[in-house]
Length: 392
Image (cartoon, rainbow, N blue to C red; front, side):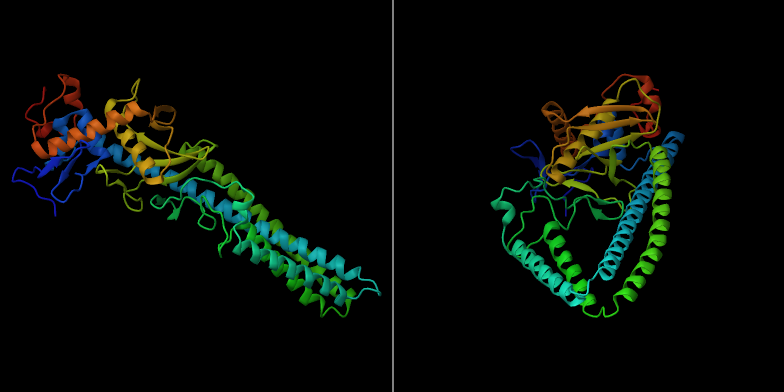
C-alpha cells in the first residue's frame, strides 16, 4: 500500500541515486506516458494525474489510428506464422517423398546375394551408432570443449506478445552449451536419425516380396508428391499474402515484429529499480537487435517533438532493462514514410533519468507549473478545458 497525502501527493524520499522511493523502498512509478505529458507541459501531466482526461477529435482519431496500426501489424504476424507453418509442413511431406523413393530403390535393387535382412542388420548397427552418439552428446558438454560458437544473448522472459510466445527459441536458448543431460538441435538430429534408421531396419525385416514392396512404396511416394505439391501451392499463396500484409503495415523486408501494443495482450515493461514502466507501440527485430518503435498519428512535424522523444527514450531503457541487450536506437514514426532515429547513448540516458527524477519529485512535493509561453501549445492541449493557467 502506497502512502499518499490528502492532496494526492506521495509520501516518499529522495534516495542516494536521485530516484524517489516510498516508505517500503519502492521507486515511485513513472510511465512513458507521464514522461511525454510532462515534457509537453508539467501542468498537462498534473491534470492527467488528477483525472482530467484528454478531450478533442484528435484524441479519438489517434486512438482509432493506433488500433488500426496494431491490427495491421497483427495481421502481418498472422500471415508470417501461416507461411512458416506451410513451409514446415511442406518440408516434412517432401522429406517423406524422398524417404519412400529411397526405400523403393533399396527394395527393388536388393540382390539375391544380399537379402533385406542383411540391410536391416546394417541399418540397425547404424541406428545404434547414432543413438550412442546422441546420448554421449547429451551427457557431455562437447560444445564447451571444442569452443563451439553459441549465441551469448540472454533469453527474454518478459516480452511475450503476438502469439504469446517468447522471442528466443526455448528449445535451445541463448548461451546454450549442452551436456549433463541437456541436449540441443544437434542431439535432437542424432536421435531422430537413430529412430529413422531403426524404423527402416524393422520394415526391411518383413520385406519378403521385394518387387511388390517396391511398387507399393513408389505408389505411396507419388501420392505424397501430389500432397507435397498442394502444400507448396499453399505456401506460395501464404507468401503472397504475407507480402501484401507487410506493405500494408509499413514493415521493411529486413524487419520482424516481436511485440505490438493493444493494451489487452501486450505485456507491461517494468524497471523496478527506477520505477519506469510502459508499453511501446512495437518492438521490431533488425539485424538481431530489438528496436522500439513509437507511432505518432497527428500532424507530421519537421523534427521530432521533445515529448515524443522523451517517451521513446523510456522505451529504449525498458527494452534494455528487460532484455539485457542495449538497443542502438529507437524509431519515431510519423505517418507511413516519416521516420526519425533516436540514438540510445549516455547523453539521452541522462536526459531520461533526470526527467524521471523530476516527475517523482513533483509526485512527492507538488508544484507543477507551465513550462512555456506559447499560445499555440495551449490551443493544442487536450486538457486546456481544465487548466486555469492556459494562455488562451
